[in-house]
Each structure stands twice: as C-alpha cells, then as structure tokens.
Length: 218
Image (cartoon, rainbow, N blue to C red; front, side, top):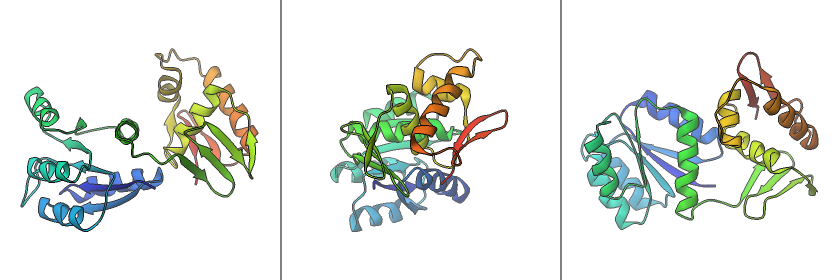
C-alpha cells in the first residue's frame, strides 16, 4: 500500500484529500505546516507528497528541496495558479502541479500516474473478500481463480478500484476508459459495466447512481 503525505494547512481540504485517497486504497498522513511535513519525512518513508506551496513555518518550495534529497516525488496542490507559478514549481522538481479548486477524480488519476512513472506503484490491488488484480500481468482473480475480462472491462475495474465509494459520472467514465469525448450515449458504458460486474459478482456492490453513473461500494 502506497503511503502519501498531505502537506496542507487547511483542515477541510486535507480531510477531503485523505478521505478520497484512503477510499482508493492509499495510506495517508497529514502535516499542517512545513516543519511538521519535514519531521514526518525524516521519521518514516513516503511514496508521494501532496504539497501546498503557501504553508506556515516552511513553505512548499523549502519542503520540496527536502523531498528531493530523500527521493520522494511531489505533486504541488496549490491556489497559486499563474503560469509562472506552475513553470517555477515544475522546474524546481515537482512531478506535477494541480491548482485549487480541483476535481477528486482528476487528482486520483494524477496521483496514480506519478506513482507509476516514479516506479512506486504496488502491483497487487485487492477488493475484499476475494478479488485480486495484478496490475503488472493484468491477471484478475476471484476466489483464487482467473477471470477473463476484456481490455475495457479490465480498465473499468481498475477505475472503480481507484475510486472506491465515489460516484463516477458516465461521461467521465467514458472519457477515462475509451479516451474519447462522451457524446451522451450511455449504452456502451452500461453494457460493459454490466458484463464486468456479473463476471466478478459485483452486482450488489457496483451500483447505479440515478442520473449520475456508478459507484463501487466498499
């Protein structure tokens, strides 16, 4: 399980991030200022830091230098949205730069991308009680037995595993899995989800959300 440090001085934002990330299978700790973030980084290993720039006691740029010395990747998550701010953050060594306000689904996708790019992703995803996904070999098992999924069904399963307990809109599901603009025809999404959840016995857990899309309940 990947461990993520949330360095953010606003408690409501930190709680939102923590809820979303832990719901997607990550372990999270929170630091409310730069000094606390540096202390946690020194005392235990992390796979990623979500880092606000405007932190008290030590700002995000200072914490970034500390992260670089420990080889911990950083995603800046900040209200400083000017082009020059984004360029500065990336040039200083951040792996990504997200401006507030942000969408949780996009944030989770970027977290996954950075972890994968930096070689810090775990290869085994689980959905209790009996579903396992080996992301290296693309093998899906239910109760220890392989389950044959199509490429789209596999991508849908990964998307829901990374967004547990979050209602996903059909248009965002289509755009993430099919990589094309959603034109309002939900039959493709619905058909693939119905087949995938039947194969995995998720009929009662991967539920339709009225006028929105689907949610994987854990």
